[in-house]
Image 1 (cartoon, rainbow, N blue to C red):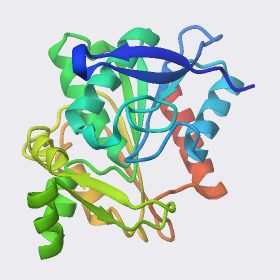
Image 2: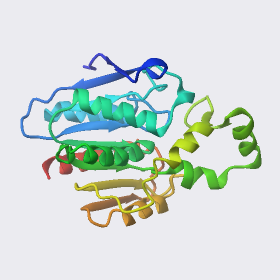
Image 3: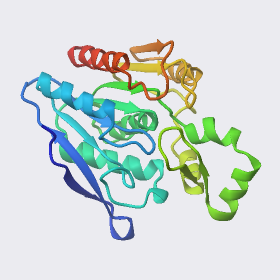
Image 4: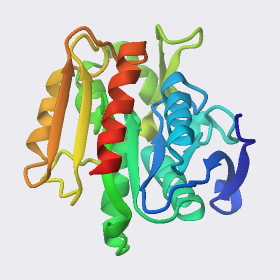
Amino acid sequence: MTQPAEQLDVGAGENERTIAVRHRGGTVSGKPGLVWLGGYRSDMAGTKAVELDRFAGEKGLECTRFDYSGHGESGGDFRRGTISRWLEESLAVFDRFTSGPQVLVGSSMGGWIALRMVQELQKSGLKGRLHGLLLLAPAPDFTAVLHEPLLTDAQRKDLQEQGYYEEETPYGPDPNVFTQALFEDGRDNLVLDGMIETGCPVHILQGMEDPDVPYSHALRLVEHLPADDVVLTLVRDGDHRLSRPQDITLLLNAAAQMIEA
């Protein structure tokens, strides 16, 4: 049975927005929980998030999933979204709904959010809350590394003149929207500019046929995780979504292994 969404207010004044959260309480003591961090313009009703929640229910694990502002069931204007804004929401959900050690499961942009959460939780003295990272086609620094170098003259002009540009996407009828604010804020949240000390195991699942995040990007991320227990699984025929039945099996097997680690 799908849990009803709970509401969490984040921010203050003109920056206040309401986040929709679905939290499943755990029934097995001593096991870490799972926190789902979705990708750009994805939501917690997606296949991977729902299957992870189902897995948690079968195993008696705590599981928390939510929609960033401007996504899915959450309020707020998508075009105001930035990495810092969505990071603030992710940390607020983590603080309000979770307890004990957690595995952060980040998909695409959610992988970037997860890595930034690690940094912020460590600053707050909460390093012990991190049991592991499970990253699916992670896209850290995607604005600066994967998008900006490929911007067309027309897209750069749109960013300068109207503050955003649109790009067709195979994942839905509406085009993706990328704002100048997203690019500028992204530069303040870069994680591939130095070593990343997570202090916990990391497992990366990456499709080699991913048209959005090339597997070379996952290899680059591994190079920035020198001190950690890192596993990289390359799926030869995998795309960006990694939502096929065999991909879901890989995801859930990796989650099970990390829970037991």
